[in-house]
Image 1: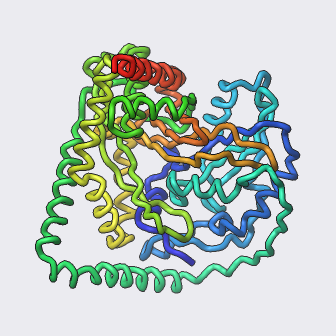
Image 2: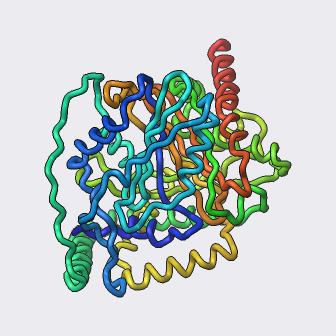
Length: 468
């Protein structure tokens, strides 16, 4: 039995019948298409490496503690592995449509919170695996790590025998409560270990507190409702999704020419896509304000154990009002530089750690109360989410077939009708755009604008190079 962290538990609390809090990725492989039974046996042979995939979430009586992970005594792999086939011609639009339908369905809380869809019928003799995992289990970085466990580093297929497994019995309600409160005491004790260091180094402590407060102040200043537009508002339970891919080398070429980071270039490209979508929908893009929440990983290099969520957040005002691509890039560079200098992400991490100590019987009901309010009156402080996850820069294989594309999916939430996930893999950068199917069915416009936006920046970079 393991307790969920406060952040992991929050992804459960904020989920309702409309906002589904699962992450996903579409892994596209070259042919030939394997047999369904071979895919099933592959998953079965790897389950001992990812024990969380055979555990389900159980609540603590009266919410006296955060939910816990326990073994599922009725685990059935056949429930989690699904099968689908795309209609001819099996093009990108068909894959996008299937992804949207699969992501519109919530995961069953009575079972381990994941699914894998084996998809046949892709063009050019290709096939795909759609991995769908609840956000309470993983963040983007952890999702990539899980994929490297399930897939191989070479084409060689080595037989792997299934490891026998017997589920541990679920603890009693009293045991769950006792574990929850002893865990809370341990958390408080761990926090107290830092007090002697803080007292012996008052100057350093004051500096740390100052930077944290400064970062939090900047974050709160960014939470200001702008002019309403069609990409922000209420959502329904159904999703639409579209994707595109660009060369990671070309992104790095732009970064080398104009400075900043790869993430700066990516956010500038995303801003261009939002501008194109706003113009397509008839919004006044020159006056629009699109505030994006940008997750930042706080995972340490030496992090071990089961996957979980280790993220903080910064805010970026996507410069959709700027028509010039280089001005957009400069605006993003300036904002992200200020966020880093003000320790905005550090402030978010401190807040997350503090929530770990909050009484669960308060956090859960309060979260659900806020969600009910948001369904009636969606928030307008954050318009979208943009997550950029670095993936492996080497090929991965499944049953001897090379994975040629890794396409990400990010959930959306009340007041956020569009979200963008970016993931790099083996020299490619993939964009996955999620939209509310009812209010923003045209996210393909935005996904299609990303390659053109990068081409604009690449041409400017090449012109600068020739001038030099």
